[in-house]
Amino acid sequence: MILYREAEMNELKQITEMCAQAYRNYPLFHILRTEFKSHDQYFAFLTELEHIYAKTFIRRRLCLVGTQAGRIVSVAMLQNPQTPSIGIIEYLRNGGAAIFKHANIFLVTSFLKLVDRTEAARTKITEPNWYLANLVVNQKLQGQHLGSDMLKKGVLPFIKQHKGKLLTFNTNTEQNSKFYRKNDFIEFDRRFLTWKNNQLENWSFMMHL
Image (tube, rainbow, N blue to C red; front, side, top):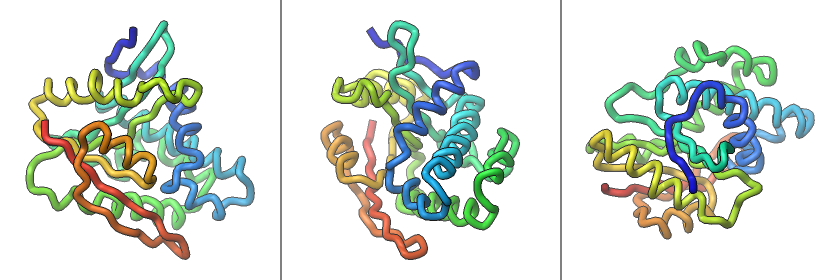
């Protein structure tokens, strides 16, 4: 049986490692790979990024985990429409300065602007909407429908408990797009984003609760 609940700060390391492993080849992050001298340097940057990201959402009490026999098997992070979007100042308060051990300020700034562009379609929605910032399943447990289970038994009940009526999400892979369509999300935008000499395909989805 899987228990869904808010993440605790003492689980930060485990959540960070799980997210970094899940995203190491994900297009939005892997697009940065050539900016680093080695894969190890790139992965160190990604791990630091995920550490800051997870710490911020845990502090906001908007990071959910699915646990089984005391082990985290899935993670979801959400943005609440009633609170301001996370900005650079909040990231810095949560240890964001450490990211500059791995990348210069110009690369970090350029990447954060790219992240903002992936969310451009949803920001035009006038109806208050919750945003699924990420959904990660332990890579050793893929194929067990843990992602769908986290959505149906963790994420959606949490949003409904907080009176949310609309959930949005975006992804950069066709495989993820199929997953969200299968779980009753509706695609409302699809576009190509350019970053330096690279193109990134971006799908946006929504679900009315």
